[in-house]
Length: 84
Figure 1 (cartoon, helix red, strand yellow):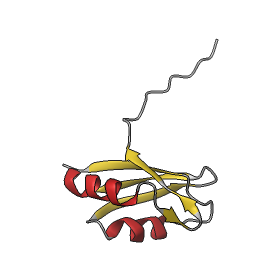
Figure 2 (cartoon, helix red, strand yellow):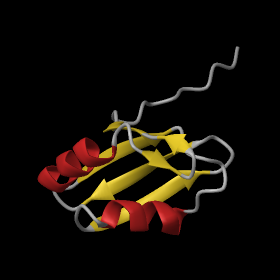
Figure 3 (tube, one colour):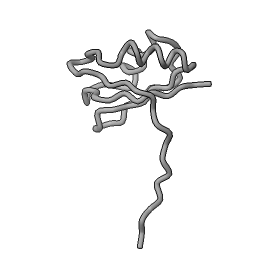
């Protein structure tokens, strides 16, 4: 079972690879994606235990001059278009 983390307050220059490298110190990263121009991203860890350790180890730490906010990602919402 994999675990997905939300990573907020990223510097806009952070790349997917940099995010992957940062989290790989805490376990196997299946996927790391920075949402371009938004200052946040998502990291998929191989196990919930690794995700919890990464969250505890990185939340509130500084990366590229910004203090990271790391939390368990919420499930994706279904967005229905509101066309009238």
